[in-house]
Image 1: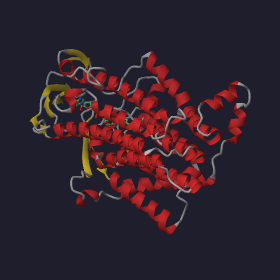
Image 2: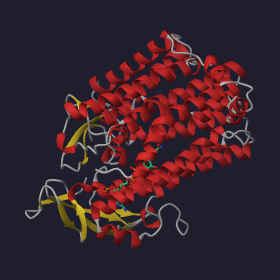
Image 3: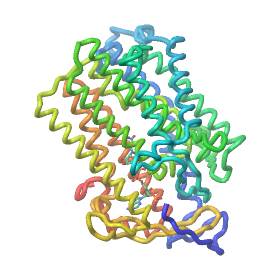
Image 4: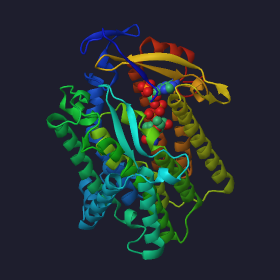
Length: 475
Ligand code: NDP
């Protein structure tokens, strides 16, 4: 990161300081220290209902052909009781537990024991040991970036199995989907609980821990900023990327294999979903070093939100389109397929280019060109807990001059394309675009709250220069 630093002798470690003309606590720009009632209510809602939402979606495919309304109708009219639905739900099996344990252990081994070799032969790929951003306590962590190689090894083994060795069926994930859900939940809860205990008793960096005094908030949003075991096993990097995101493409492949098994063909909509989401996943691993500078790593503490979310929410709900297409194989006409492909690719291009422009700008400290012109930016400064003053810049050229979060806009266009590939027969595949719109709009707001706390009046100058968040002229 291109932040310059200087010691501010007048800054105190604790208490209020005037920063950038705004009265802020020095430690305010990280996660919140205090919980307002709305945050608490949202957190309690999510803790209670998020696991049920996941179950409801997966169960409705298993028992109701992906209809979200029929189970409710059955329950409300008394056609069925909760116990009828529950009794028909597959339980945890030894087979699923074995598969899941092997899967997570394999990913841990790839993460911990195989240093990156991809950066040695792939031009332009940044892997190996990389630095993260400055934490609120002023620490800079090192990370072993080897996600791309983990993804490649895993997928080579998958294809070797599916087409050559036949150790297990390529439909194995689909065939064990609900038993695997229980395993994912066990890991999600176990890791979040462990992270909470670790935060209290043996944190990796005590200065970067935050306690609100509210058990539920701390459990959900995490106490430790960057919990680690040993020097390299970083919880956030591991759980964010693997096992969930490596699994994403395998889950989709398993759905495609199931379509082939059931109907003797793979539909063009299934291919579109596999290709578009495959590009998104590969992009994530190709840019894993850049990912160290995103909000998940730079801002969020590691709690249930990330721990359970990465183990359960992401693999189960981000792959709903493929699951739906197993039950409803949609064959799109060529014009629709091409239109959806274009929407997905243009969305991806905007998403990638916007992220790339910021990354290039920050890496070169503004000494670069965007769209052939010298970059324009706003100078800004902020302080870490120990009173060190840092200088940074906010880009106002390229897509960053159009809107403050145009990367999210591209992401939303891509997300809509996945959903449209499923046609209009059911609501379930559209969950993803609804969820992403809420997630990314909420992200805009919380990121801007954080940036205002961090940069003060400099952030105000930036929002005056770039007034819109997602869509120029609209929002
Ligand atoms: P950003 O990559 O936009 O990062 C926001 C941070 O960038 C800010 O906190 C600030 O950090 C810095 N920043 C903001 N404006 C500027 C500017 N004008 N110039 C330079 N730096 C600036 O957001 P995210 O980390 O949320 O997202 C990264 C990508 O991941 C996005 O494309 C998003 O769509 C995607 N994403 C996908 C999700 C999914 O579930 N599929 C979930 C979340 C994100 P600083 O403190 O360094 O100034």
